[in-house]
Every structure is written in C-alpha cells, then in structure tokens.
Amino acid sequence: MRWSLPLVGLLAACAAVPTAPPASQRPPNIVLFLVDDLGWQDSSVALGPERTPFNDRYRTPNLERLAREGLSFTQAYAAAPVCTPTRTAILTGQAPARSHITYWTLRKDTDTSAKFSGLLPPKWDVNGLQPEDTTLPELLQQAGYRTIHVGKAHFGAVGTAGADPRNLGFDVNVAGHGAGGPGSFLGLENFSAAARKGDRVWDVPGLERWHGKNVFLEEALAAEAVEQIDAAVAAGTPFFLNFAPYSVHAPITANPRYAANYTHLDPREAAYATMVETCDAALGTLLAQLDALGIADETLVIFTSDNGGLSAHGRGGEPHTHNAPLRSGKGSCYEGGIRVPLVVRGPGVARGKRNDAQVISTDLFPTLLAAAHVELPHDGVERDGLDVTGLLRGGSLEADRILVWHQPHFWGVQGPGIWPFSALRVGDWKLIYRHADRGFELYDVADDPGETLDFAASARARVEELARMLGGRLRAMGAQMSLDEATGQPVPWPDEVERSDPFRFFQF
Ligand code: CA
Figure (cartoon, rainbow, N blue to C red):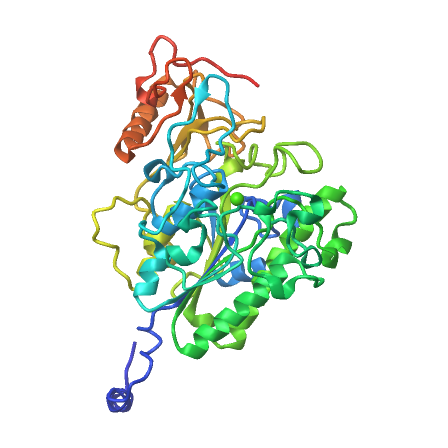
C-alpha cells in the first residue's frame, strides 16, 4: 500500500478527533445465515463436481450472487446430523462429543432420543447450552459488538435459561426459543401449532405484530433483521447477526408466492422448493440492506446449514434420495446427513472461488473471533475447530485434518446410516463405527461421495488404523458412548472392539 505524505498528514490531523476507526482496523460486521436442514444439493449453486438435477430444480439467485462474490466450500460439514448439537457447536467451538450436547433438545431434563434395539443413550446434556457456557456472541458482545439473534435458536431446552438467546450472549432475540420447529410458517396462523391442533410448545414467540398477516415466517424474520441492522448501524456499533430461518424444517409448507415456479413437481417437493426460495429471498433482503447502507464491503456474510437435508420421511418421492449424489439425509452418518453448503463473502475473502478443503461448523468459532480481532478465551476450556482465515483468503490446508462426528442416539426413523454411531474423516477416507453391532464401514469419500463401495472387509489394516485414530480422539474429548442395554456398560471404543468379531455386517 502506498501512502502519500499529504494523506498521512491528514490522518494525523484527524487523529485528535474522536471518530470511528478506519475501515481497515474496524472489525467487520458479521452475518451468519444458518438455514435449518438445508441439504448440500438444496440450491442452484452447484457444490459438487458437476451440476445436478437438484441444482436445476431449486432457485436461489441470491446465493448464486454470494457465491460469485465470495468463496464456496465444496466439502463443508455440519458438526452433527441434527439441529441442536451443530448450533451449540457453532456457538461454543466445541464438538458435540466434547460438550455432551450430542442430540436435539426440547424440554427441561427430558431425553428426546428414540429407542434403538440393544442400546441406550448415555447421560448426555439434555438441557443444552446454558448461561455458564462461554459463547461466540458473548465474546463478541464483550468486544463491543451488538449481538442479534433472529429466527430459530434451539440452543437450550424449554424451561431452562438457555432457551432464551439473551441468556447466551445475544443482546437481542427475535423469535428464538427452545423449540426447533415452528408451529406454523404462516402469519395468517400466527405461527402457531393451534391451526394443526399441534403441541403449542412449537408456537414461534415474539412475532405478534405479524399475526394475522399474509406473510411467510422468513419474510417476517428478514424484515425484523433489517430493522436490527439499521439500529446497529445508527448506533455506530459493529454487529453480529445470527439469522436462522426456521425453514426448511418441517412442517413443510408451501409459500404461495413462489408456488408457480414448481408446478411440475410432486406437491410436497414443490412446497419444499418454495421454502428454499423463501430462504433465498430472505438472504436477498439482507444483502440488499447491506448494499443500501453502504456496508457490504465491511460485512462478513456466512451462509450455511445445521445438518443435511430431510430425506427419511415427510418428503415426496423415494425416501433417502433427496441429497443425491450423497447418500441418505438428516439424522444419518452418511454424507447426506452431514455435508452442507458453506458460502462466505466479505473483506479479505477470495471472490468467485471454490475451495475443496474439509471444514466443519466448529471452525466458525475461532474464525469469526479472528475476523472480529477478538482473542480466543484463556479459560482452560478445550475447544475444537480451526481458524480457517487462510482458507477464506484463498489458501489451502497444509495437511490432512481429522474430523469426528459422534451421535450416540437414534433419530427414530429407519434409514441408511440413521443409527447410533461415531465417524471420522481424514483425507479421502471416512470410517463409520456402528455402536449397535460394533461394525465398521470404510469409504473413499473423495472418489465415492455417495458411499456406495464399502472397503471395511478388504482394507482391514486401514480400518484398524482409523479406528485407533477415532478411539484416541473420542477418549481425548471425553465422549460418551452408547450404553449396551444388556449390561448397562458403554459399548467399546472403536479401537477396543473384540478382534474376533470386528467386521459383522448390519443390514436394514
Ligand atoms: Ca436442523
């Protein structure tokens, strides 16, 4: 950078006047746009090696714009295949295996896990995130950010302090609470489950001004977020906006505004596609406001999802196919359950590029703190995740990294990979350890992202090597294994499975 003398003089002359720091020193605003259950294929942005029929089905022009102006990750992962553990992992930087928030939460002191034959879940943290936990918004708040949550929270159980994002470091909470789905997506139904005679625990709180209006939930959320952005900018403070649509989670509901775009689809799939487009329109609303306020260049925007796309039930067409070419979907250990979109735009971020590095939700914690010029807390708490600032600037990983997933729970729906499991990815390889039968699966995910060819029986040395790696990581994180129902004891670590019987196969 070249500085002319007159400019240096001008800056020196201004230094005595209390003004905002220069743009280069001022921490960026941060918008984390976290869609619920949005699959890796649920957009018109192709994240695989080639365009797919799903990329042609969905209409997400605003995400396309973000991808043109930013960096798209092709191998980004959610920390878990269901909602709460990924959401809390983003907020704490801790993998679910470490935090013991390994499954979704709902009511205080109540385990939501379904029963899997022969297993019991461990005594996991059924109340989720609580005020004593150090969170990303709390650290940003302490650094002078205005911290704003809009939309689905699902961090802590209903009836606990953690249900309210304001107890977890957010200055503002719009429409977030302990439940992970909305009673209704329709303002005309007051976003309440009353219209479907459902449990009122799902009623979306705090949007009374939109009740009775012909508005879809994410349209109301986007309008609320715009007001919050305006207020932060007017106050002269940087902001962290955690914008979390309730879409595209169940109950799958058509937004009539976009229905004409999908008349060729099965009605359920058409409704789903309108929800995808509604989320994209909300993204467009926020991007347009950043433009209008002249702050797009000083705002980091991260678009991602908390788990893979729903596919085991509730969808039109053949189950387990909605994330193709990936296998299975939400709740599953297969790629369809955990691989998610991730597109980032902002100051210093490579423009119009793709990156094949393996990244995971927990990376957001150190990366966003670094972007905000905030040090990691020196509190002795072990955290996971990698500061991937170098990747955002266009760099690559220097070495293979180890990613771990751990879900000692059953999601309650039959389907491929929907069982209690631990899994590891390193380089091209992915090892899955099934808790119920202590069996393994091994895939070359780089060549075979659909996980069609299992090498576990033919590459036993690699299975043993990766099982040792996985066992070591799980022990180091203090992971809680599923319990054997017959003995009440934890199932063996993956590297302690009886050698006489390590390769049993398990069929649905
Ligand atoms: Ca979710």
